Length: 278
Length: 313
Image (cartoon, rainbow over all chains, first blue to last red):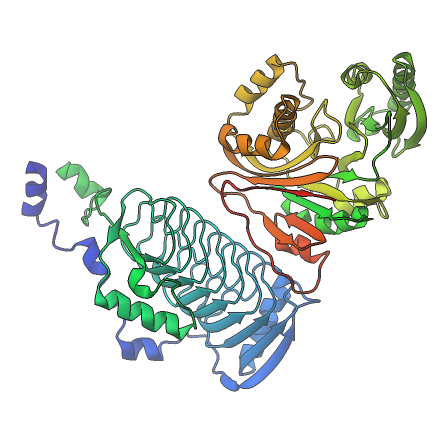
């Protein structure tokens, strides 16, 4: 306690980590108008088809970029054939319809596009996604939405292990069940699992919220049940409706999991400062 | 990294040689060092067994002129020893200069036969059984399939492996799959790393099992064989392995009529599964399954700690 008092006296607790989750990084006006310097001006009514069948992953991604540069705002991709690293690094507005399944690392490092995938995705789909939407109509592999920072990532089916690890924002919605270690070291954002969740859910999470509609095999270290509020219920209803999903037992009966904040030092001390205090 | 694959036809046979080659070739990027097949053809009847063995490593053949005479001598010694123990060689095929496929009529102790054959310098039995034929060599699937003429190999189920050597040598001995000596028709492919390998190996060696390599994957094969020797069913032996083998792993195992998969409790190694009434395919990546089914199919990842077994009939 003495140490804690000392650190407070030194003015090291002016900003709580938890408070940052409420912080606005962009004004709505700024985020609406935000574009990358080299992004393309596209027309959503201009539509192109892309046959990925005979192309390598790199060629598919280059072709997508070429279509963007020509102003195509809607692209229908056929025969993706579960190839890896398809539709990655898109920092542009785009409606992309993928008529098939993707392999590993699909839709990674994207900022802005709206992508709908008719098939399944392999490991690490939408890793580091910044904004936009990715909707998968079938199942997804492990590390789904790892380290996403924004946008909506939706899987209508089941998802493997370690979904949303190191998640820093955005929303992940799962229509079915999810594997073990989901939400590991989650830092911000919301995760919704309408089916069952595997063991060690939310292990070592710093912040953020996890909602589960089914059975939870086990909570991870420092993940604790939270109280469902009307705000949670309203948000869930709105979000699920947006993607045509329904909680099997009703949103009111979902479980809410949050960080217990007992495991870590919830302060903003730098390592050097910590040495002084501790 | 390694890539593993398995397939099983239910109630019929198929060209498993071509199917597995397509799957493994699409996994080549996961490990180009060696490729291996465990193919389950039409089972032999009665006392007939199929033996796949080698008398030298592929690399040995590049070392001087004498090796070419030595492999001939070694093969003759193997032939002599089979006959000494009462076996009759019904068919003898030369898959390569150093690897052979023998159909043998044998009524005696198979472990004794295996040990006696392997006592010949350079000799290693890759598989012994009624249906199993294990083929493995250096290079990618296209090369191995061509070398061993696997196109058109008819059977019910198969395992395959593309290897990226990490903990042992790039040679046939360290290539997968592994036959579960001395059990007929049991083979294993594995992707991952066992952290209690040496403890497990010492325990099994004390029980009389032998290891041909220093590869942790071989431990799984021998572990399962040992469990089944004690009377356990395949699925029960696999369930035990989830508890007793430490590390991160996904493995596939095949017996004369079954194909099984097991995933560790961390689910740290990938596996994609396609299941229909007539065909089951599993692979480290969906792209391998797509090489057999180019049209849209429903696939999913088995979960942590999951064990599944399918029968061919």
